[in-house]
Image 1 (spheres, rainbow, N blue to C red):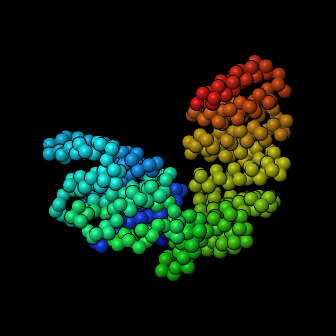
Image 2: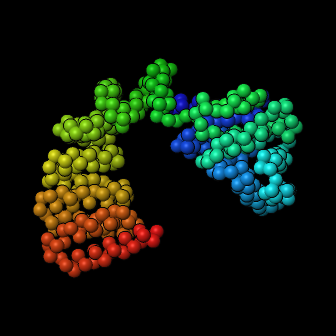
Length: 414
């Protein structure tokens, strides 16, 4: 998957470095937007000369979109001036008054803002202004593309465009893009794709790439096996895990052996083959103990508890969940500890050990209060409300019911 990120990052960096194109339209799904923004920041941090303005504000209408951009730039301008003043350096000139006039045509106002920003970039030293707008949402795509297309240099590069790179996000698939971009001069059309198919294809390439080290290729194969498991491709997942297990046994990598065996157990558990799942999870314990990585041990303890519970092996499941509780406490993982205590209590309830069960749920409720986990608190209080009557604990039942009512009121008012 590293290759996929590298290719996308290089596509942005190459556009910034080249001298022919002014504008890049980057098709990017909303789910991939955080990654795209991270790549932009990576490219920004790799240079000491270029100046970046990056925004991710939603596009509702041209006027509101530009107004938000002006406000955001005004705030960045203010902070920059404060920093310069604190160092005893001359501050930037103020923004033109005309930028405050929302009655201007949005395209002209945005162009004026970009031109002003360009004047703040030093003329010498090869400095460039990279203006990137990646809206989280594009509510009116035709209006958005109309605004973006106003920056196409149909009449050639103008003086204000020199040293400038414009990058705009488009949410559509490449084949749906408007022709004014695909056939326009000095415009680059690109796609930033981190969807499941693109990720899988990139991983397949890495697995087959003999220029990579064996360990790098095995890591890509492990990720592919995990994706196969998530998409219930049983045969593919098991075939990949078999290759991985052989490799990591040969290289005596105990941690990866445990992770691969856990992955095989997950494949069987997802398909309700609980006997095989349990055997593979149990096999993973030995290399996991040798590796001594708490999070892997905790993952196995939970998985073994889940399988034992489904099989009706409640005493064994109780012990596994108790181990999960201890490991979660060691890792200071409050959420996992609350879950472990809850499930330990459910195992105890199934065995008729109601006093032990209430202690588990009381501990989980106390932890949830102290760490502000209201959803877990409510769940464990509901368990207590169910079992307290069996123990004739009317006093505690009344307190639990009162707390549940309070939580319900808070949910409504939130």
